[in-house]
Image (cartoon, rainbow, N blue to C red; front, side, top):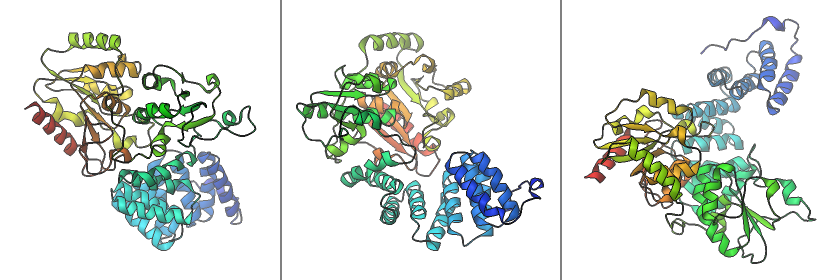
Length: 476
């Protein structure tokens, strides 16, 4: 591995004493979100001290924050080469390799970093994430517990511990640790602090789950669209304890929230909210209701398609598809902005075994740029693209009602289908989101859903084959 190429012509006037100041300035710029300016100072510092592990490590961070992942990996690799006993260098390389899916190598460098500095919480935290990605969940929990003991006020290890516990079905402790999610860097609070303090000497407190017959509760549709669908089932339970409630959610979630709240009390901006006494995010309701695997509210369906819109979409599909064919909906990719999208999404062509089924018509509900993949579709089954005509979740639910089954990766559409009771096959990555639990082909959250899991990271062929075999078996 060669030393990454760095410019040197600009540095003739620098003296060795300038190095520490350049590094301090670079660290400040990285914290301020200016990696390009930091990179320039780091290049100067490396020209003065080519083997300084601090300078090389910060240069790798600058590359990562600038989106240059290949360069970041090279820089972290060179840091380990010139400073093999530097724990932080191995920790940085561990995380870079993990993001590239090179889990064996990531584990080796993570374990070496932990051996060199066993009392650094960030090293133990990263190692726990590697074990989660390897689906060694007991070890992931063990390392995150160690990180929590070393840094009990840092939210990252608590959140990763929560994901490991919830994935394992250890819900009581998992929900408690899950409360740390709002303290993660860059995560906004569920309610703007100014709104909690407005017009009162004491800020409005969070709801503790006790009945509030004469006070108003604010529920917040937080996190992703799939989370809103999943946790909306708790709204009727909250209403029994707090009859006077309002809901705040994004415009996209209103078709869901209006249904479960009886079509009232939904607001899409903070300014329109009436006064309230206590508040709770939807994702906090499972903890307040003491949800265990045996007590998940699963009265399905709790979402329904609008009858007029469903009739319109059915008429359109009847005109587009041959009669007598089983209608299977497809969603093969999620939002690119999702933090785990590189693992949960796939390409349309990877569903090829599905294309050759007899008497099957495929209906694409895929939205966004990945619709373009349909232009390269070749298969026995006719495929209709409805993505361009889907305006909101009301359209999506109306289309789902006209399908015999949905085949999807882990997206909000899969949650919608599950909440409607539409038979659904979900294709899951090797290390799935916590809600899908471990080693199960079903889910207590959505009884009509069947799960097909990768058996090795990044390999979709096996779950796709299992899904197609399941469809053939059901048809027989």
